[in-house]
Every structure is written in structure tokens, then in C-alpha cells.
Length: 294
Image (cartoon, rainbow, N blue to C red; front, side, top):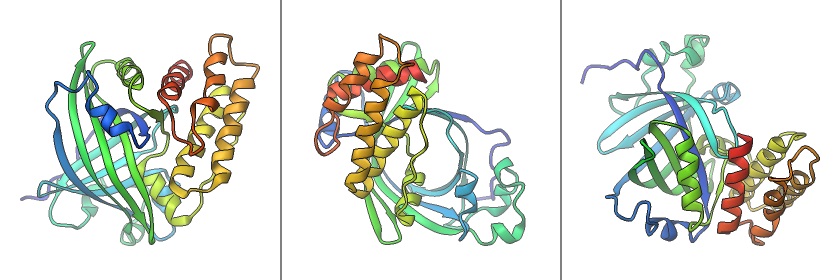
């Protein structure tokens, strides 16, 4: 195979990420939205790269080699814009030979053009994500959406965290469709919005450091609560579950929250169990809030 070049323009990825409770996969696969669609099942092994001093992480760029069906795909993603599980980002992906990074291809992309050859030469594996993906193609409200259920593990520096999540990726049409599908799923599937990418989770896991952002507005408190729940499920430290409940309380009491959204915010702490797992009531209320505040 000739050494292919990455696409000149970055496709814009729009997706909604949802963490699942342990009961979520069984509930999802019997949901009326997908139970008549034919699933595709794939095994994905992924290696993420960075410099020893974390230059890509500091720039909020993810670089990955993915092995799937005998192919090796190199992917670059920029930081997602958004919260409440919804993100929009630039993404480049192209096939490469073997198991080596295509450095020449990287140098053509905007996130890497400021990095000199000496820095690029220090890129090395930092973490792995190995999981099974079951995906369905959904046509809903004149939009094409890929629903992916991911089950597996993140591994970094001897630490391990589970992957149990669902992604709704817009292939064509309106991003509003993602919210509509998620709301229909949440009525029967125990889920919650997640704002942490697999790469970000792996980096935090390896460093054993999960910083939470300052919060002032309702959307910032909701984002802080979501990140705290993501962290708690990766590290099991009760302080992060406490931080999530505190952030949800601050959200519910915030004076800027309107009268339509306040009752939904007040439901959230009661709709999480003592292990920080969501009920269907949590998912429905959280998605309504996230959609309004997105």
C-alpha cells in the first residue's frame, strides 16, 4: 500500500457521549429504537501517543493508532467543544502501514505544524483502550446517526478503568436529532451524560490526577458534576462522588436557573444511587437540562 496522506480538511465530528449503568447494555439492546436494526460487532485495540512531557495533552490533542479488521488507522482529534455529553471537534483519520506512526502525515495537519521534528520524534505510546464495539445505523428525523456501544478497558501505567459507554455520532442531518434519540433511549436505559473522552480518562488514570474545573454558572456546575462522576467511576475515590453531589446541589440552588429547569435539577441527586449509578429518571432529567444549557 502506498503511504496515504491524511485528508486536507478535517471532518467535523459531532457526538453525544453517554455513560451506562451496569444494566445499560441489556436495556439498550432490547430498546425499540434499535431492536429491529442489524448490529455490527467489532473488536478495537487502540494505542494513544504523546511526548514524555505531555505536549499533546497540554494542547488538548489526541493521537491514536487503531487496529481493526486487519487495518491500522491513524486518528487525530482536537478538543471537543461543548458539555452535557455533546461535543463537536475536528478529526482526521487515515490508513497507515504496520504499527508505526505516519509522522510525515502528521506534519501536514494544523495541530502539529508548530511542532518541530525533534518533538515529533519523541512521540511514544502512553495508554491503551481495548474494547468491543457494537454499532447500529439509525435513520431518525431525516438524520443519519451511528449508535455505538463500547465495552472494555482503559489501561495506563498499570492502572485500569472500565469502558461502558454509548456514543451517538451524527453522520448527516441535524445535531438536534442526537438529543431526541438520547431522550428516547433514556426513558428505558439507565445512562447519564459523560464529558470525558477515553484519551482524557486514560491520561488522568496514568497520572492519578483528576482536576475539576471551577464553576459559577448553572452549565459550569453541571459540567463539574459530570466530570466528578466520570472521575469517581474511574478511581473509586469517594471524594469525587461527594464533589458530584455537591455540584448537583449547587446547580439546583443556583439563582440563574429558571423555574422550568429547577425541578429537573432537584431530581438529579435523588436519581443517583449510593454507588453513583444513574437511574432512568437521572438520564431523562440530565439530558433535558443538558439540551437546554448546551
